[in-house]
Image 1: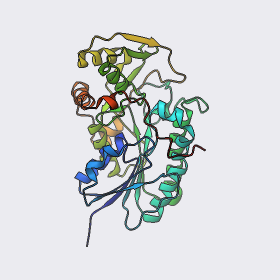
Image 2 (image 1 turned 90 degrees about the vertical axis):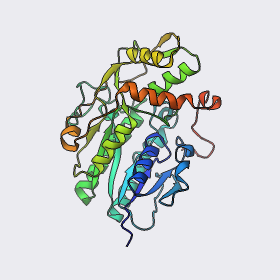
Image 3 (image 1 turned 45 degrees about the horizontal axis):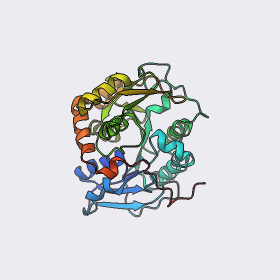
Image 4 (image 1 turned 30 degrees about the vertical axis):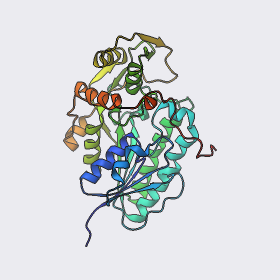
Length: 331
């Protein structure tokens, strides 16, 4: 009898989804990747296509999901994840966090599968508590420009907990803080690829605000390890996974200039509406319940990430907008 576990990973062609596909393939799982490729890229997973324990569905999770046969786990990681994306496709962002998770939960219930959702530090909004613990309820503007993402994720947590409580579906909730590494889209609007892209193109580095706002950056391999441990734990409440090593954006820009060996200036522009001023995870629960904490320091992680971006083609380096609207009707 085949005892191989089968896992469905939505958003499989994205930054995090593709790394998760790699990890579960390595662990011996049969991996079903699903992505509609609005923001995902097949090049992130094309190395897996030759493997017999990987299959790919080009499908929008906001529509009914049919997976034949056994299914043991579902990771719902489909969603636009950067401000540039969700400001351009706000309806899809809301749909993947509502209709998409509803479909995944229905599938998990039908298959008796364990489901994990990718929640986010954005559920805390522009926090008034620092660092952010899982007990903090957040400070979110539901009708602001970021609300489509923040509230989609908050709803996703609520309906996941409802299915867990009412239908006894096995669920896990990971609240992901800023993560970086190879396969990030260079021009997706997030600060790390934005800075590296500007440095590689010889452009000045752009800081929005005065640079005093903070972020805490976790290398993708550390994040994947935390996700793997949480999925296989018995913890149904949300868990923060991220790196608590906090840095101001101003200091981070100086690190990137030093890393890339460029002599660009730093220029300042207005801070976007509702942009969080501070972001730092309290990972006490991850440490005590999962025996997890990040291992890769920022210097090493940035070195690996910079090596990846340096290997991009000139065309990729100058790409401004990857979102493929041609295939989709915006409703």
